[in-house]
Structures are given as C-alpha cells and as structure tokens.
Amino acid sequence: MTDRRHNVLIVLTVAVVIAGVPLQAVNAQEGIVLGSKVVEDSDDNRFFLRTGGIARDDVIYKGLTPGQRYTLAAQLFDVAKGETVGEPTFAGLTPEAAEGSTSFQFPVPPNRTRFNIDYAVYLTLYEGEVDATSMAGARSLAEIRDTKGEATVIQVHAVQRVTVAAADAADGDQSLPGQGGIIRATVDYENLVEGYHYTLWGELLKPSGQATGIYASIPDYAPEGKKGSVTMEFTVPKGFEGVALVPSIGLYHKSRVGIDDKGVLYVLPDAKVPVMIASDPNLNVPAKTVAIGTLFEDLPAE
Image 1: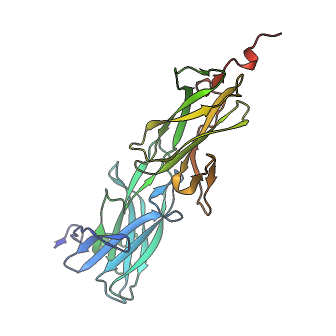
Image 2: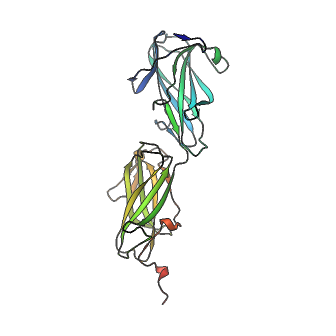
Image 3: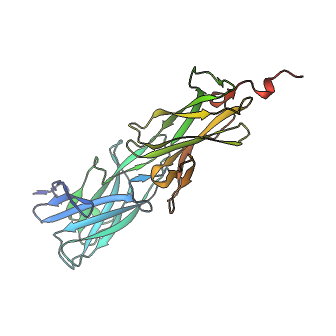
C-alpha cells in the first residue's frame, strides 16, 4: 500500500535478528527487508560522551535488485522533543546480491544540556541516487522509525557527576574512635544510564592527598535510575589516630577495569578510553572528612 502524501510505502515491524542486527522494516509490496543497528563507532555500544562523536549504522537488507543504485539516509530524531535534529546523512548503495549488509557513518552532536539525550536514528532506503536537494521527491522503499528499541536509539550523556559525603558508620558523626572503625561514604550520582554496568572504587586519603592503602569498591553496579545514591564502607585499622581521612571515589566503566585481591583498581589490557567516567576529587570538604580520634592539630600545646 502506498501513502501518496509522502510517496513512501507502508512498512511493517518484525522481530527477527540476523547477525546481531534486528530486521526492523519490511516492505511487503516490494519484498524488501531492512535492518539497522547503530553504535558509537569506536566503542561499539549505543552510548556517547557529552562531546558527541561518530555513529556507525550497520545495515542489513534483503530483496534488493543486484546492480541497481539505492541510497540510505540516516536522520537523528530527538525522542523527548519529538523532532528531527540536524541534516540527514546519505550513503550510496549498489548491492552485488539481493541480500547483504553495509555500514556507514554520521556525526552525533554534543550534548550541551544538563540531561542525557536519546536520539532515535531514522533510516530510509531510497530508490536511485538521492541527496538533500532531491530527497523530497525521491521514492522511499523502506523506513525504520523505532523510538524505543535499543538497536536504533542512541544516548548522548550529559555531564555525569558523583558527589561524596562520609561519616562514622556507627553513629553518623564526623569522627571515629582513635582505634579505628568503619567510614561509610555516600555517593550521590546523576545522569547515569539505567542498567549499564559501572564500577565504583575509592581509597581513603589524608587531606594532603597522601595514600593510606585503605580501599573500598562496588565491582559491579547497575543503577535503576539516572539519579540516585549508593554507599561504600572503608574499614580503618589501628594506627591512624590523630589524622583526618577523606574518601576519594571514582566511577568507572566496569568493562575496562578490574580489582585485584588486595583491593587495588587496575585498567584492563587494551581497555578503551575513557576508563573513568566521573569522580569527586576535592579533599578539602568538611562533609567528606572524618577525624580519627583527636587530631594532632587539636591537641593542647605542651
């Protein structure tokens, strides 16, 4: 059936997967099947840094005519605003067989807002050679307009933040007994990706930045919401009486780091960058600082 207002053929959505790419558009009249999976080109996942980047659309097709010229067009669609963004990107296709695959790239703009942006990638297969000037009158053979499926919805992060507060786990104040105890750090986060796997890792430092070798971690954390909080506990042994300790905690891509049997974080071989996503590096914050016993500077002068 043809929608004469737009000169396109109505498409049906099917739940079929070939080589990891879902077949999302089927043109019953023409016998054309089209599938698309969009990823960040350097990292092969659907998440982009706030600076944007280059997306790669891995496309599969069935039912094309070998040797005939076609054009693929990708257009970003802001899911929240319900509007297209920027100009479409066009890629020519001359298949050697009726069934096959191809890939092409297009830019993703930076996110200058305070919130993550979800873009659906609208993919259109046109007959013949098509560009921006001829697109309005071109014949569309198949379209993908999925605003919910992860295969064609990418996310451009806003600034992902963590902030840390710390207290005695026993009574919630800013001091531990001189013999030690447990410091509980509360990590508040925002703009994380629901269900994505992160690692949180930290070390207690002295206000000067000197390391203590006291670590805590959550090796695998998958948040249920973009904004929330999680706690980590650092066990302080004897020997730190008279000093203040401050947790320094970072948020990492779980797939790029590991934690050894001593609790030390390390970067996996060939890990892609960035490894760390966010941290709260300021050590001169009273809400993060816990005194162990009576601080040396607070002892009476002799």
